Structure formats: C-alpha cells, structure tokens
Length: 198
Length: 127
Length: 121
Image: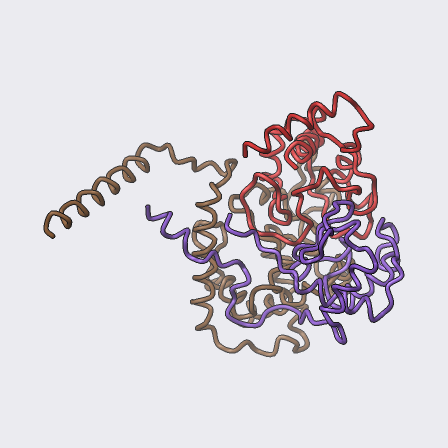
C-alpha cells in the first residue's frame, strides 16, 4: 500500500516536472497567428461555457428589455464600445480587432444561445485571456442592460434594418461602418484616422 | 494526463445555457414528421445535405445540418420561423438573386419542412 | 488528416487539367498555407467553420467544409475560384443585401484564402 502511494506521488512529481519544463522552455506557441490545438480550444471553451452558466445564475432578473428608450441607449453604447471588435449585422469589426486569438465572437447570433443574464454578466465581468474586458467600472448596470436589450434584438434584424435603426436613432457609425474604411484597409499605406469616414 | 481527463467531460456546446435564450424557433402549425415526408416529395435532398433524410447528400446548396442555429436564411434575412417558411415557399421573394428554385411547396408543406429543419442542431461531435 | 492530403493533391492536379473536371480548384491562385493564416487573421473563423482550423462552432455564415463542392458562391454566382475571390473582396457588389461584411481583405490574402478553401475542402 505504501509502495503504491510512493509510486503515485513519484509519477505525479515527474509529470509536474515535465509540465514545468515544457512551460519554462518557451516552446509553447503563444503567437496569435498560430491556431490553438483542437484539444486546447475544446478545454478552454468548455471551461468558458460552464463558468458563464454558473456565475450568470447570480445575476438578478433582467429589467423589462422592451421598455422604450432602452434600444437607442443600447445602440449608442454598442456603437461606441462594442462594434469595433464584434461588428454588427452586416458590419465588419474594425481592422485592428481582426486577427485576435481568440477571435471576438460576432454578436449577431449571441442571443440565440445565451440568456440576457449571461450576456449581462459577460459584459460586466469580461473574460480572462480573451481580450474581453469587464465593463463594471465603466458602465452602470442600467447601461449594460441597455446593451443587452439591443443584443437580444439582433437575431431578428436584417443588416439593412440595423443600418436603418442606426440612422433613425441618429447614432454615429463606428469606424468600421464606413464602407471606405474597409476598402482603404486593403492598401497598406492609406489607413484612416480612428472615427473618420474617408 | 490532466488534459485527457478534462476532454472526457461532456463537451458542452454554446447551447448549454441553463435558461431560455433567443427568439422562439417554433413553426406555428408545422409538423416535423410530415415535414420529413414533404422534404422527400419535393426532392430537397437533390441539392442539400439533410440529416435524417436518406439520399439527401448533395452539395449544390449549403448543408442543412444546423438550421436551428443558423443566424441567417439565404444569407440575407434573420433565421426566424416565418422567414424560413417564406424562404421555402418563395425564395426569390426573400433574395431575388438566389439560385434556390421555387419548388412549389404549399404553405402547409413549407411549415412542416421548416418544423423538421428546426430539429437539426448540428454539433461538431467529439472534435 | 492523411485522407485530406491526396484530396489536396487532386485539387492541384485538377487545376492543371483546367475546366471540365466539374470541381473548381484553387491551386495556383494563391498559397494555401498563407490562406490558412489569413482565415485566422481576418476573423473568418468567427462566423464560418473552416476545415482544418480551430475555432468556435460558428453558424453565423455557412460552414466552409465542402465549399469546393458547392455549385454556387453565396447562392448566386457559379462556384469558381475567380468568383469566390470577387465575393471575398466585395460581397455587397455580388449580393447587395448579404449579411457578409466587406472585411477589407487585401487581394493577395483573398487569393491565398481561396487557394486554402479549394485545396482543403
């Protein structure tokens, strides 16, 4: 019995040493231009999904997301803070966000598989090692719920309906919404200033 | 070792929300079983891969493996029950340029087909 | 993996034979290895499932797993490498109402993407 215990401990110690050596050697490919192994991705994605499901359970009941005024406010925040990385229906994210690993998910379909409480929780608290910041100290809860109101509406919008909503609410488009910016990004030397349509 | 152990955990997809999310994907008056039959009758499988329909393995049109989770129909309108029914009945009314033919589905057939397609949720299997 | 290699070779062969094989092929239009990099760096995998690439199980755009065997690009144009190239560069010119955004892909990168898609699927 003691022998078994010693063997187990020894094996674990060797494994830990090999793992530590691997990490310390610097061979782990940290480059964002290199893909995760499918197994690594699956493990992280599972942890991510499970964690959101668990911690979002503590978010209280959402306010009435259909109340008037919430959508324009949410759209304003979304265009200011979110569309640059996540795009919008028919709108590409800003060029700087393309190529992040993990890639910021498109928000158009998020509300098909996440509850309002989960979307609220992710916006408020962010996601480690993903580039997704927590907005807890930057936006009030009510403002985050306004964004949630918009995000839950997105799965029902055509790209044209989204553009019309942006126009009708008088919200300035994010830089990526300028069609000329995407075209300009194609030529390396003509990079427009942030927030400007050429 | 540790990784292998973790990998055997159920690889819960994004669907694992523990709550209600998204627009209701229910087709009013649609019957998935009748839909399966209508799909055979109208020959949808001669252009699409459709799980559960024998012989439906053509790649002319896009595969219909995860219709319930698609964001858009025909690449242009949001995937909502009434949009899908309209698309099946009259694709050109939704996207005039589409190569998808009007196969002459009746309203009831379109509803049944849409109901069947919404049972298809994809999933990538174990890696 | 091993089963994909002969397919990829087939694709390259088919290109030299020219039209008539029925399958559009991508070899020659660009560099598939660079295309794989571009598919990641332009965020294509955020919306599309791409063969041989790790990413979310995305359903915003169609899966690109058998894109070489599809008859149409975006449901509207015959599926040829040239049409796929135009689509990636200027989707709204081909289908004005499409939800696919213009991602600002440089032409060489788009060529590489096409090469990857037609050799890997």
